[in-house]
Amino acid sequence: MAEFEPVLTARWGMDAPVWIDEYERTGGYNALRKAVTMDPDEVIEEVKASGLRGRGGAGFPTGSKWDFVPKDTGKPIYLVVNFDESEPGTFNNRELVERDPHQLVEGIAIASFALRCHQAFVYVRGEFLYPGQVLERAVREAYEKGYLGDSVAGSGFDLEVVLHRGAGAYICGEETALLESLEGRRGQPRLRPPFPVVAGLYQSPTAINNVETLSNVPHIVEHGHEWFAAIGTDKSTGPKVFSVSGKVEQPGNYEAPLGTTARTLIEGHAGGVLDGKALKAWTPGGSSTPLLTAEHLDTGMDFESVQAAGSLLGTGAVIVMDERDCMVEAALRLTQFYAHESCGKCTPCREGTWWMTRVYQRLEGGLGRMEDIDLLVDTGDNILFKAFCALADGAVSPVTSSIKYFRDEYEAHVTEKGCPFKTRAQREELAAVTPRGAGVEGSIPLSEVLT
Image (cartoon, rainbow, N blue to C red; front, side, top):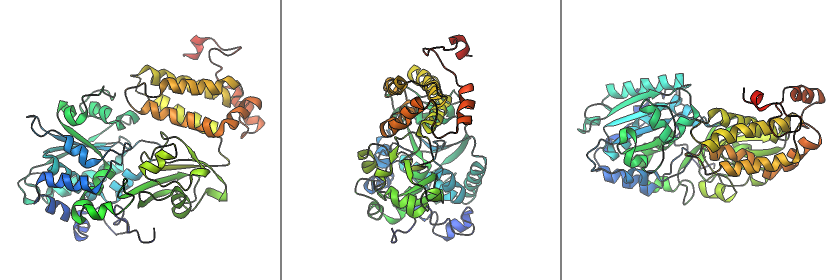
């Protein structure tokens, strides 16, 4: 770790890396000037050889995705940048843009050249007012300097970049829902196949990449695939910006090679658990990835190691919970989030997440039954892999994983008639407003539940 030199965050300590003059002074746009002298297929092969995998959650090989985009359909090819960062616990894309926007702009230009794409769109999360303004200024500067627009870097290759602001919907982080929103329709996922690389934006071949993914591209082109592949592990190459939040002394974004252990991130970078308390649980990739425990702290933060531990690397967002946290309440809050953000298209997700929140409210309010625990597991089984997109699957993760590792806390909520982490007064106050729901002795009428 001591020998690792920051790549994506190297300019963060400089005075004005958001300005194009400072970016150029420190080697910015050298990679673009090099790329446009290469054959587009050479650029794709360089990215493929580097082993770069998508940083948006799925971890699909980036070069392979670009290679899959058909070049001879007679339709335009589009590049869409997913800057709709809304996964709870994830904030690395935002800081990458706020502190070094031209790194992304250069990555967009190189990717577009490789794809033979002349129109790129950046889908910006609706709440990202300031990051959107920073990126808009960076794009304008790149046009003025000739890195975008007509004859990019004097190459004869033309590229237009459009920023599109979303309206704050979590579902639009899903690539096909993003495309629907970008086309002016309601943000809901599409049935696949066909996949976006074949029929994406305006039913044309489309590559969709995450901000962090594209930010890696200039460094690969400039330094070569061998340099990039030497960082990280054999199958998970390169650096990663990990977002660490929750019960830690120093929450923030920390860049480290893929494969760095969770213990190093939490204890070495983020200063350890807040107030010296014991770690209870943590997410390796945002709220939609299954929880892990203190027993998993030495897990390498790469795609393969995290999967072997029973979770997913996702966006690399580490949310830390300590001994003071109630895992039932944590699962309730996350389930409420997914119930609220469900687009409503798929019945298992729309209905299942809503009803799980009712069961959780019963448990927290002291009205739970032992069978409610298995009811949550059963409901999760009826949601998992039964919807159009992964929002439903992510909604199940905190439920099933918290029951797997902390079933005793669920049972304590039943035997102690409420949350054991709350005072008696807090329990009574919560019980007074807890919906009992259908199927519980003394339940309120269904008509009232649904109002």
